[in-house]
Amino acid sequence: MKIWLDGGLQDIESARVSVFDHGLTVGDGIFETVKAVDGRPFALTRHLDRLTRSARGLGLPDPDLDEVRRACAAVLEANPMPLGRLRITYTGGHGPLGSDRGDQGPTLVVAVGETARRPDSTAVITVPWTRNERSALAGLKTTSYAENVVALARAHAHGASEALFGNTAGRLCEGTGSNVFVVLDGEIHTPPLASGCLAGVTRALAVEWTGARETDLPLDVLERADEIFLTSTLRDVQAVHRVDGRELPGVPGPVTAKAMRVFEERSGDDLDP
Image: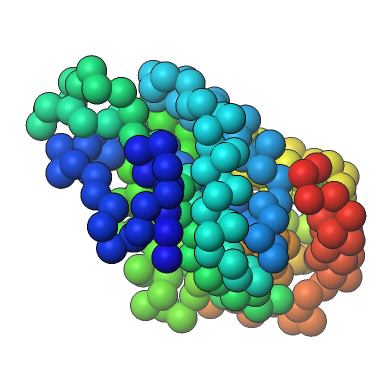
């Protein structure tokens, strides 16, 4: 297995990042997860656009996108697999033990791991913790993921694959690594970016391809929605058959099933939409 680090491919067994890297010591970093099908990344341009937005939001130098593209291509060529999780990590680099950044420049790591297609439906739970829609990190895809680790562990303990958050205003926000959509009276709705949710690449494509509306939704909409589905890089469009103790019958419902079909067709037609 080979990864990209320090400007070139390295064996995973010998690749090393400093123990003083700011991504490790204070979570000062950003990342993207890209789906790779038979060695070809999906929606890479959109992911790299978001990588740059996240870097600017965190105050990191703009990543060299030409290098990132070369790194992705090299890693995928060196590690052939039918379905891969391509991970781009970009941190503040070597720094002091406090929150101040060092001056040695950022660290770029690109790696890939084999993955499998997700089931067509899943169970989710809601958690008592909130997303802060006014946080300095709201909408940025940072490596500060401990909150998601805790919430996801609770989901797994309850037989679910995802945990959904409200925000500080009690509105529906997002999952630990997904965006959430609900169907009400035949119409698809998803929380707006102002809710504090991540601007998911799959979310944006689903909105564009299904005509979903961005709607400020109360958290308890999950108790009455006709259908619920999640979107993410590795889930694509995934139906929800249970939320907390509520079972949703006939999953995927007709609206979700159509969204799944449309996404599969459109994404198959264009690998970089």
